[in-house]
Image 1: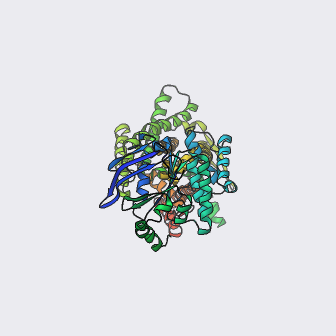
Image 2: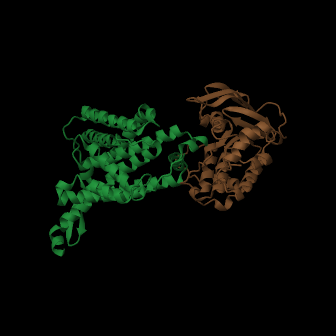
Image 3: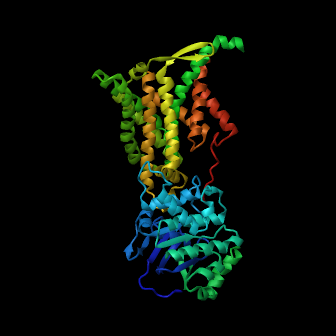
Amino acid sequence: MKGKDMGAPLLAARGLRLAFGGVKAADGIDLDVMPGEFLAIIGPNGAGKTTFINMATGYLRPQAGSIAYDGHSILGLAPRAIVRRGIARSFQLPQLFTEHTVLENAALAIAARTGLWSPLARLLRPGIRAEAMALLDRFGLGPLAGVRADALNEGARKLADIAMAVALQPRLLLMDEPTSGVATAEKMTVVETLVRVLRQAGVTAVFVEHDMEVVARFADRVAVWSQGRILALGPPEQVLADPVVRREVIGIEAGSGHA
Amino acid sequence: MAGWFSENGLLLGLALLDGLSYAALVFMVAVGLNLVFGVLRIVNVAHGSLFAIGAYTAASLGLFLSARGLPPAAGYAVLLLAAVLVGGVLGPVIERGVLRRVYGQEDVLQLLVTFALFMILEDVQKLIWGVQPLFHDAPMKFLGTVDVPFGEDVIPFTAYQIFVVPGVAVATLAGLAWFLRRTLTGRVIVAVTTDKEAATAMGIDAAKVTLLTFTFGAALAALGGALASPTTSLVPGVGAQTIVLSFAVVAIAGLGQIEGAALSALMIGMGRSIAVYFEPELEVVVPYLIMVAVLLVRPQGLFGVVETRRV
């Protein structure tokens, strides 16, 4: 399904604008995310990639433009309400609950989905525990279930973070640099694991990525961000070969050591 | 040394028993303060007012009901009722009406707002209860005294202060530890404390958690006050004294510590009490000397961990 038109977009952004002071973080963003695709967002730091994720998940409100999910506007909804509709996210720095074990983190996410308010119920009751373990096993994190989240290495932290997002059973997952901070040797394993799980679960994914090898291998389409605009959009083999993209974006990437 | 002990042993015993009871009360207030700070990230100066209002409410209710024939044993239920009333009414009013407006604002502004709230509540308290001492010790008298063996001496001490007050504090400590570590709602509170943004991203209603936690913390402070009410004459200013000591306890324990707060409350309670009996003029400074000594060695508190800030 590499970049083919699959009918109605799952997420449709039109004319998004947002400026912080004089900096235009979004300067007319139009983007359709199609059901089932893996869309990579690349671009230099400060281009507005994270701003887009923040707008799509309710953390920032655009000054102009519209965002629709599954045909309905989600503009102005609180992050919590957007999660409930099926859009989950992960942050650039894994936001695991460091006071909790990996299993408890996963269990909390499951509980967040199934209903939280039963004051004296135990968190790790059998149903939740079983689902949490099954989820961790899919991410290869089963052996780490009992470890406190702050004791994990970066690759496992990233996977645990995304496992928590998957526990919410989203249809769309927005990931901000899922491989940043992960050791090079570990990186491909991490991406392979998360792509496998997301594909199995039928989750549509948008991910911000600096590693062009990851982008070329795993993305169905690539959107190139530059100064709050989308500079290019298309299949990776086409976009990554674009001379303007190579000069404006990948050149900068290589220069800043991200490669 | 032996000579000193035979001369002062009784006094030391009294000081320790008094200190235990006082520590238990300070713990109740400090642990609520700590919990509230964890979730709201606001140092609530008005937390002491909730202690005071809890105490006044318990004493008034107790006087009112015993004048109408309430059996003395039911006085304990009145203490609990006062805490639930004060926490359940003032908690949501303060959180929704005032604090919610200053979340994420500058620390100085938050501090000024809760300080203003403290001043207002002090005056409200004077409006309702006046400035004359209020005294209702029926719940304490009901249990009488017990003889506590201490060395060769026997110290008669009120059973209420030895059993009820520390008992409630220990039950609070154990209950809270279990609640926060094992239950779903407890884990959600800890999650919001650790990272509100991530909790929101998971679909957790942080506003609801905040309201719940604040109300619970307020009820704990009020329960501390209610428990204290039979042991002392209530006068204006009782809230200020309590909040300052609770700050010292939280600073010594480190943020987010429950067992640590209990231990710190014991240090402060005992230290203050020993000062009261042996060097009364030092009563006011001893808790702060302990605090300063701890913070000089461990700025993050005895049990606190250095917090890493997310970028």
